Image (tube, rainbow, N blue to C red; front, side, top):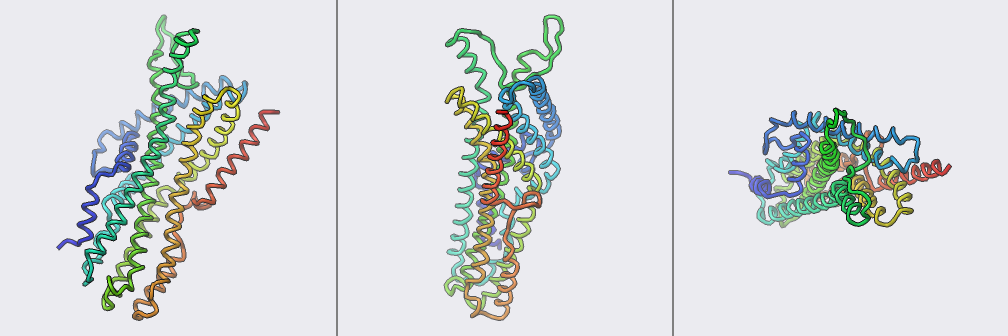
Length: 420
């Protein structure tokens, strides 16, 4: 007979998860298949080659613009620098997650299918109120997936704003120039860049239309990289915090006379210990996947926030409309780094509360084996689940403040240098 919890996990697995759906397709659009059980990886290699060629072409065009205007003021090419960094990080992320695609796919499958909780043996015990216990665990998991969808889709909407801005800007600029100002009726490029082309008589190769849509695709690649891989971190870490919440609930009721009879408590606690070991393994897999790419992301985000602050300070002199557009980009980058730290802090907080739950249950009135397992769990739980940034520090609210403070200091330095 199949475990009741396993049946519930299969039911949850079949439920639609909008946030995870968009995360998987965003990664798939870059040629990284993190859900091979749902779709084939047949054309992923070809997709990655095409994405790489397009992204390198755009980066080259941006660098050409930077070098062309290098001797002019920094305000002239700061936007090109921002986009170069963003596209470069996207390429790095694509190669990083492709190099660890098996580990990534395993984590996604384990998260969606609830592999950590399967075959736990909890409902094989002679518990008097299995139905009530199952409903409580299911409620925690369903509520956790609801929160994941809300956070991921909120980030989806935020990231869409700068993409729409860069995509639609040339069209609105054309309408403004041609019908309002009535100065010129030429379609401008999406953002400052110099795309190389060859002049063959009266023809250009590639043509202006191809160069235009090449740059138009740039914001889309940024969207897939920023949303897809960052939201994947949110999904995995938020699910991990949900697993810890499940374990906390089980530990809190380990000495409950209503849910767990006294003769079943040793075996019940063994299931809790088994779940703790699985969560620990799940956590270390997440850390190994994101450990170094987070360091790259945090470093680049600090630079981008610094440059955006500088861009905002210069746009203030031009007008509030332009400042609003740049602020959208600023909010996206700030939220990008915030999601990493807030999600990691949630895991750390839950693991700290788990340590207290191990200690606060009435373990001192239980059997010798029960007390021994509690002491061992207190020993292992003393080290909280943290996610490191390249092994130098850990993600947390404190680290988030340090990143913003560092960006502000660089901004002041950059402004003072430019004023001189």
